[in-house]
Image 1 (tube, rainbow, N blue to C red):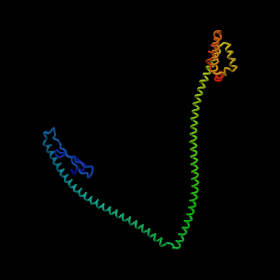
Image 2: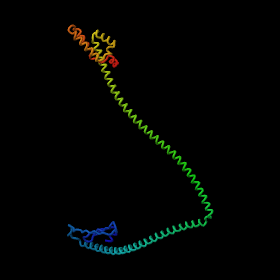
Image 3: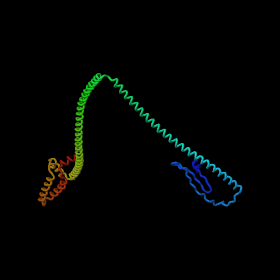
Image 4: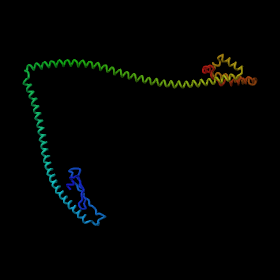
Length: 310
C-alpha cells in the first residue's frame, strides 16, 4: 500500500478484494486504502479451462507474487530510507532554525554597536566643541551682541504687528460697513419686492375691474344701440305730426332734460286729462294711447343714448 500511495494512488486486486489506494490532500497527506469485494461471476463460472492456459496463468501468478514480494521488500527499504531522510531533515531544520536565531542575534548586536558608535561620535563632537570653545568674556560679548540684535528684531516685529493691527482694524471697519450696506440693500430689495408684489396685485385687480367694466360698457353700448335702433324704427313708423313734435322736443332739449320719472309723470298727467275728455273726443284718446306706446319703452334720456351710440 505504501508503494501505491507514493505513486500518487493505485488500484490493485488481491483475490476477490479490490484495493483503492489514495493520499489525503490535506494535513500530513497520509495514505488511505478503501477495499471493496468483487462479486462472484454469474456466467462462465464452470467453463472448462485448458490445462495449458491454466498452467500459464499459474506461472504468471507465481511470477506476479514474486514480483510483489520483491516490490514489498523494496518498499520497506525505501520506507526506511525515507524515515532516515525525514529524521535528517528535521535535524537539518533544527540546525537551520538555530542558525537563523543566532543570525538575528548577531544583527541585533550589530545594530546596538552601531547605535553606540553613533552616540560616541556625537559625544566626541560635543567634547571637541567644549574644548575648542572661545573664552568666557568673548562668548559673553557674543551673546550680548546676539541679544541686542534679537531685541532690535523684536522691536521691529512689534512695530510691524501694531501696523498690521491698525490695518486689520480699518479692514474690519470696511468689512462691517460693507456688511451693513449689504443688509440695507437686502432690506431695500425685500421692501421693493413687497411693493412690487402689492403693485402687481393692484394691477391684477385693476385689470380685472377694467375687463369687467369694459364688458359692462360693451353690453350697455350694444343695449343702447339696440334701443336707439328700436326708437328710430318706432319714430319712422309714426306719422309726420308726431315726428315733427318729437323733433321740436329734441331741439328744445326737453327729451334730454327729462328723466324716466318725469316722462312717467307727464304720461300720468296726460292720462288724467284724457280721462276727463274721453267721453267727448275719441280722437284724442287714440292719439294719447299711440304716443304712450311709442314713448314708454324708451326711458333713457336721448342725450345719453346718443352719447352711447357714438
